[in-house]
Image (tube, helix red, strand yellow):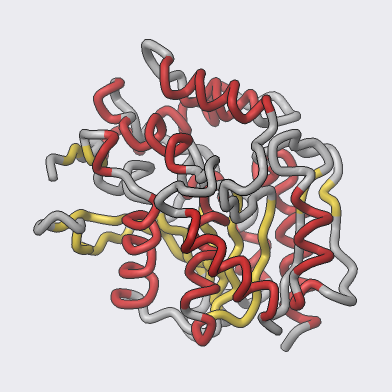
Length: 303
């Protein structure tokens, strides 16, 4: 597998993100290895909060949440998915599969970091990956926080706005990553923050990951990932693992999934679930500290 690695100087002036990167090698699924990156903060022996980003962002997305979680005594771990952030970037879209992304994250957080009693926070693709891991490795997870995400099986249609996004990101002559993130936010991002989202992608040769991910979402019942997602959905629906469904009030893509998760998932029953006000798809950008406070309260309420 041929990969690219973003030069370190691209990340030299990130606003509000002082966390030094850490790196580990994971099998690439093709006979070689990939370097995955993550940042972490908080006490090494504190309860673990695993924050998984989505498309086309990276761990920078969690920068306003990390201080709130750490102040509550939590150890926060934020990986960069393969193809994003400081992690290696396979050059071909075909090198990206749903199964590989699940395995890459599994290898990092379990085999390398040996995380246990995890509170998983997953937004967008972070939820698609994190919920699969929680279903397939329930002994590793203490709590689940799906936030503007889901677990699609291809059995129900995606909304038209999602198809428009997929078409745009797969076929744009060149990707303006900062613009795509801005389009999913309610508040105006500063030029410095937009540059932070652009940083992992010096030119379009680095963008195979962002371009590939929309095509990996199961939209037909016979999609390669559909059966595994159906099994994960069934496992999570029956699981007693506490779940906090923390969606924003302004995401047209994932918003309709919030009441379904709250109703169907056993771990979400008989719980007050927040709706994060004034936030779009990237609720971490629009209301990160608010979301983080809800997570802290959830952890304290489910010891």
